[in-house]
Length: 376
Image (tube, rainbow, N blue to C red):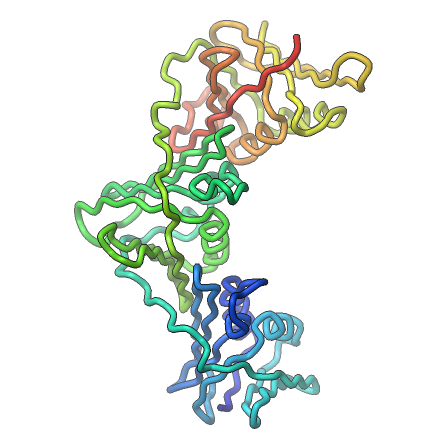
């Protein structure tokens, strides 16, 4: 095997594939990235058996060949090399990587132990990469981190023809985002549950492409696979087992009051007031008389208060939230203003974005936040 390729193309491909490598694989071969030089392209692949990534790019191939090399080391080397053509060749049981005066020699791993990686399912639909990445980021923040509750570590994907609904919850908050896409077939309807980390990583990494093709294997399929592809990169991941909890009934309908607040000063205030206490201790909020009072700390402990001007419609309300979860929601709405809708001090509140204080709320993204109890 011997080929020459531009540094940017190699680094981009290796970086993409290395995301699927495990830090603690069940077999040594899974530490590696497969390099397959054939025709006029180089194909890279890596996997941890749950997630598999592939990339391909054009190269000047002088000798065909296939080899398995340590993946993370290859990624670090390709990132560190200058923007010059890189020559890669197999010399016995070693792989030589040369760029200008820089030369590296890598050991090879056994290809015979490397598993066959799954193929991408048939495409289900296509969406603009920036729209997909933004939607996933807005939802993935609400996914659980506790691996003992795997269902809650996922993002639930529901496809209903032209509309895709993403949802995630850790039981203390819920994020729901609706986006439009172009389905590959009319009348398509399916659901999937994917690890939040996996889908967030894929969406973020594919932003450089124009569109992302999403493939969801039908529920009747033995391999419950989901896949993403764009511009020479593909990723497949096994769907999570279990049923995502029904959530639509949690979105409150009987709104008693709404507050409209400018996001930037609100976010700054939340972070400042929360400094005096642990991030899991409630931040108390009081909405009344066109003002919002924020308060944290009590008794002999450090305390902080701050007041903001707001637009309040309906009844005054006192409520408390986890300050970290509140800050996450304010960042996620991605608009200059936020509308918070309440049904009571002990019931969930809904955050939605607004471009202007007097404009309509943007209803395609909703961030539901459970209140916390606090000693009055």
